Image 1 (tube, rainbow, N blue to C red):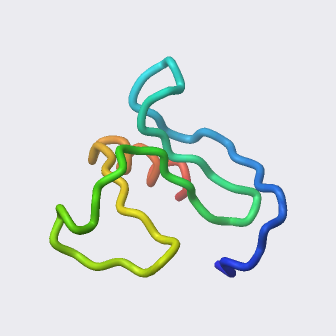
Image 2 (cartoon, one colour):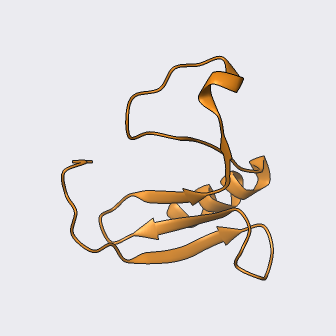
Length: 72
């Protein structure tokens, strides 16, 4: 994915952990990618270094498995 693409993004929820919409969720985009909503993890606390512009996000394993079923 080209990080310089700043065009509007359309998201479709394909898997989520609750019914309120305010919990970890996996979205399919109109760009052929996935977006993950989860709990932000501090890279330094996790003992890893990540590049500028990236974030660590924690999500439940069952959420990821449900998303895989939707994209295959």
